[in-house]
Length: 269
Ligand code: KIV
Ligand code: NA
Image 1: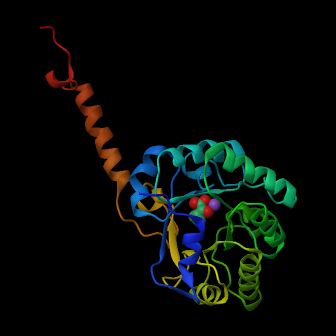
Image 2 (image 1 turned 180 degrees about the horizontal axis):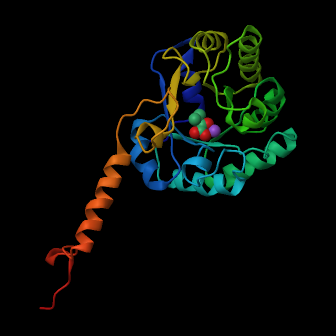
Image 3 (image 1 turned 90 degrees about the horizontal axis):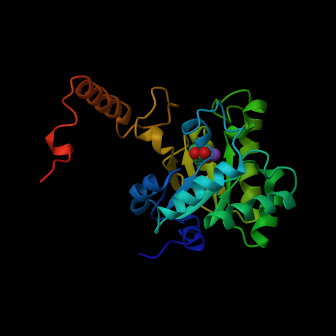
């Protein structure tokens, strides 16, 4: 199977219609990528790895090196999906030149095809700068977790007219700047629908609407690895329960000296 390309994904939405929604999940490791790859159009190396893998309090402390290391692992573990890497906080906002340097580093270190960055109108010139120099960019509007210190939390966005209009304007600006897709996170459904109709590129919803042109979830969230998740997460599994039951069973057998058994030990002759 040949790897999908950014232009193919971008073309999934033509004349404002996306016949088959884009499927995206996050991936941070090679093995995870191997398991998800065949089912996904896109694997996102999300900076959510800050909380999910590193136990950090937000995505703000995530570094370019973390993203490059996990990005390389995900590229090595996949052969079908387009791999897109989140640009971490502080690596792109300063100037288009700084953003280009960071994005080029990520693509060179990993072999991934695209980057994602947060922000709307303010980031549009940067998106255009990168795209014109050969780096496909995915946008991200609505609830943008890197701005947690400005937003004051992770509440849904667009609950008043000014906020709603700003989100639509942000998405339009990214679309006009050449973004190949836009994540729409944590907004009132009517705004997600309006944004999806307003932009030529596909929208990828999370806490948004089934009418977006695609969907994304954090894989560990949808696998049920965490007790507390945002309400927009649907749990498709209960891995936390499975893992903790397996650990309990192992601990019990070790303490009873019933593991290892004869099958797990080497004998002479
Ligand atoms: O970091 C991340 O996982 C993301 C997705 C939730 C869109 O940005
Ligand atoms: Na992210």
